[in-house]
Image (tube, rainbow, N blue to C red):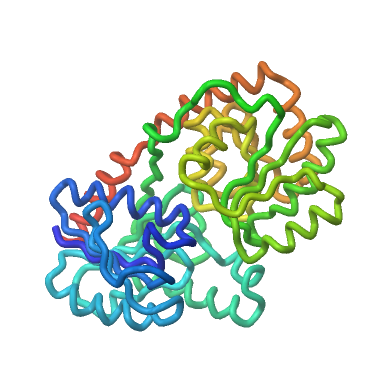
Length: 363
C-alpha cells in the first residue's frame, strides 16, 4: 500500500513531540509490512529537502506557514499514485486533503484544541484556529484518535459522529523505556515536555513550593523548552525556588535516565490527548501525577499507577506529591503497578490497528 502522510513536523524537527514519536513508530512498522510511506512536512534550519528515516521517505517543503500551501500541492500530485492519504492533525488546523484529491483520506487527531486555543494564541488567532478545527467534521469520513476521552471531545466539541472515530492507543518502546536499578537518592519530581501555558507548569511550581515545607529535600527538575519557559523561570524566582533545575534539551539517553531515576512525573496539563510521556514513565517504573479529565485519565489508573487530581486543585496536587515522596511502600507498589500497566501498550499493536483502518479506508 502506498501512503502519503502529512504532518507539520517530522521526527527530526527540533520541536518534534509525542505526535511525531507516534508517526515514526507507526510509519516505520508500516514500511516493514511492505507499505511505502511518504511524509510531507515543513523545513527547519539545517534540514535536508529529502531524507530517508527508518524507511520513511521525508519530503520537506516550506516553513512554518509556507508548508500549508506547498504540502497540499505536493500531496495532490503524489496522491494520484497513492492508496490513502493520512492527515496528521497534530496542531489543530486540518490539512483539508479531502478537497484536493480523490484518494481516500484518513485524519489523525491527537487532541482537541477548543479549550486551549484562545489561552495559547489570544482571542483573534485562537478563535480562528477553533473555527478551523471545527472543519474536521466535514473533512474526514474516518478519524483515528488516541483515547476514549479524546473521542468523546471530538464528538461533543467538533460534532463528529462516533461511528467515524476509531480509538488506537499509543504504544511504548519497552526496549528503551524500562526500570533500571535504584531511583535518585534525593526525592525528585520531574516535569518533561514542552513548556506551554496550557501545560500548567506554574501549578507544578506552586504545588512544589507547598510540598517542600513538608519534604525539605524534595527536588524539582523541569526539562524542556517552549514559548512559556521564560514566564516559568521568572515565577520560580518570584517564589524563591532557587533549587529548581531547568534543563532545555537533553539527549535521548538522558531523557530515559531521568524517567527511570525520578521518584514521580508531574503533568497537570489542561488537555492531553493521551500523554505519551506518562506511559513511558510507567514503563520505567515511575508513577505520574496529573489532572483528571483528559487522555491522562486513561494513561493512569488513579491510586495504582499514579494519581489523578481535580483540574486546578494545586493543594491536592501538593498533597499527592508529599504522599508519594514520604511513603516508600506506596511508591514501590505504584512503581510495580505502573510497569505492569504499561505492558498493555506497544507500538506493534498500534501500527497493526492503524493499518487495518487505512486498508479499510483505501478499499
